Image 1 (cartoon, rainbow, N blue to C red):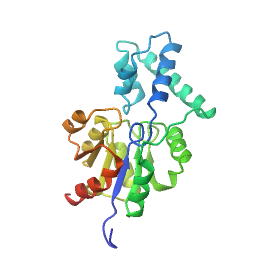
Image 2: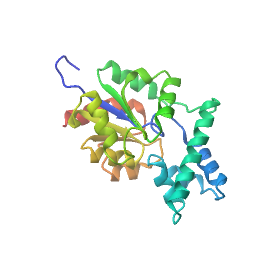
Image 3: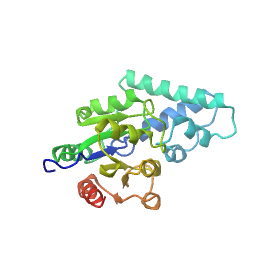
Image 4: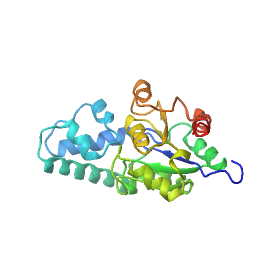
Length: 227
């Protein structure tokens, strides 16, 4: 970017986009169901809701119960998650190319933020473990804003970064990320290595759909030029 150019912001989802956390998510959901006497749904069904608020996921997987049931399942999931963090048992590897694309975007002058359904502690831990937290000017989580696809995470990230919607890109692996972007009037890039298929990402209006992080730089530049 040249001096005097407007600030530009790239906002990443975390689970399924930057890190591979599906095994831990499924394991913690399975534990929550088991602890409360329910048979766990199949892993594919649990993965399909990743990105939505936890209570929304549990309601879709186990419909027809009293609100207190879902609240207890959420608490059980979070307790299992925290226990694994405390024991150092949550290894969530970076997706191929994630570190490199963050470094490239930062070097090119883009601001970088996070919008994730994870809690703040888990999100910050994942970034710290991989030595990436200092690249992020805003970290929006389930603790700081309403869950996706409510636009709150993006609106707060843009406000903290001082960047307008026309100069912002949302990058995510699910239709919930794309809905979040649409609700905040922000362009989006879908990635195919996460939880939702290419056809679904295309149908929800992604400005670009990519198969590897090597393709992100050009996609971001093209989408922002067209604003």
